[in-house]
Length: 382
Image 1 (cartoon, one colour):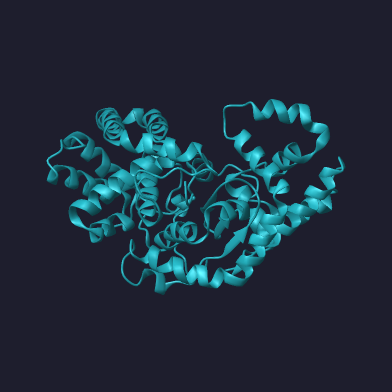
Image 2 (cartoon, rainbow, N blue to C red; image 1 turned 120 degrees about the horizontal axis):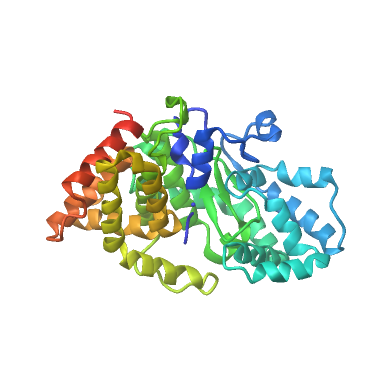
């Protein structure tokens, strides 16, 4: 995720997907809608370039739903076959149902009930509704992006490159970028980068691209193992994923975020939660240290500890990882982040060294460092 998240040459790690639950399913070989659909198998994603067709197909569906009619299967298929919505389905399975719920008049009672929920669904539904209400602005943004995207990409890449080993950005082609209306979000996946045009209209595109480019380019050189390296799901997968996300989001947030995050009238909820979670990082890392210690002494507790570890860090560890990365940069400089780009466990070790250098208590005990070394041996290529 950006503001608040491919070529055949990309040696991708299967862990590069940002959602813990999706990764766990992928390792287990569970069928995931979108990720294993016939459309994905029959039509390869573009290797580079930008695709806006998801925007146009969304408004065709919206016009039909506005009349309280039901789109045909062919019309839904045209929407879901766009590269943008194929990217949506990787981490947001069920977008078709959410679009229908948000926009079909006869579903008002069900929609009103859903809007009162305390999960992410109300925010997604409100975003979809607003995309229709602000259609002119979205289409104006689309037209502007068509004219200026190459300039935005050129402006974003140097920001990305600051937090990657020298030459990384120049070594690989620009990742594919697809657009779809789905949520106030954007993220990088193995096939490419997904952006929402209303989200871009609200927040701009250069910082968002720079952040997501970091995920894409860092995945090309990451030493984290691939799914094919395992014959069965490793027991400590979720525990490692907590480490992986702290590294991924922590370094990428250096590209486009400051602390504290300033108020954002389009996303009032996000800066407050981000800033609060950021400030709690030392305490959260202390709790993580305790979980690692338990696993070191009782390996059979790995799965439970992994579930608890991922529950510690809000938003896949964006704010907590950003705290850790900033401590490293302010103590040793940007170059000290580079070992962590290749190896998520090295990122935690460098954070521990930075805290000690700053006169703070060591964030990890000797026992938890041994647990991290075990994770490194399982999940990171030498």
